[in-house]
Length: 229
Image (cartoon, rainbow, N blue to C red; front, side):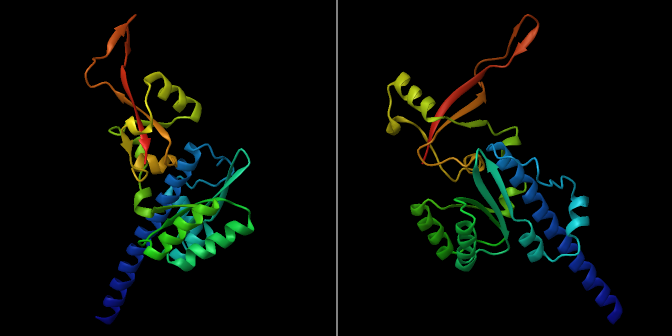
């Protein structure tokens, strides 16, 4: 009986471990897609698109060691972005990450964690922004799928300042005249948009049917603009 209980316990632990590893792996896959969509170069990063590959490489590690070994730094036009995985996110973790960023002269980081971020840690992250140190936070649960690939989510595009100025001039409007979208809206977080950015949202038209031109179907779209707040 004791042997059976021990075997069952080990089986349950193994199942939990595999589920945890899968969640970590998936968050890594989506995080790399996210930074690539932001224009960062991930060509030299091992993708582990297949969970079996990931398990083969990390299978003998516990979850803390897996997360610790996954730190990455990617580049975009000379700008560095650090990706960091942690199980929990207390103030001590934020301080450690800020120190690593300072030593590496890195101003931007994406912190991915499993447990809820503490209030004090969130406050420290907010205060660091004053000095230009940006730590974006995502839970592993948020990165189990790519929100931009959902067929029901319209395409979101961050407008350049030049485009924003042109839209404001063409429509003779100011920021207060624009509809708003939260900085915590999933597509906005994915894109890394900032408050004050103008977002172009492209949807398939609900009111105008597709038309055929020279035997080719043309899909018509509606375009709206929203301000990140």
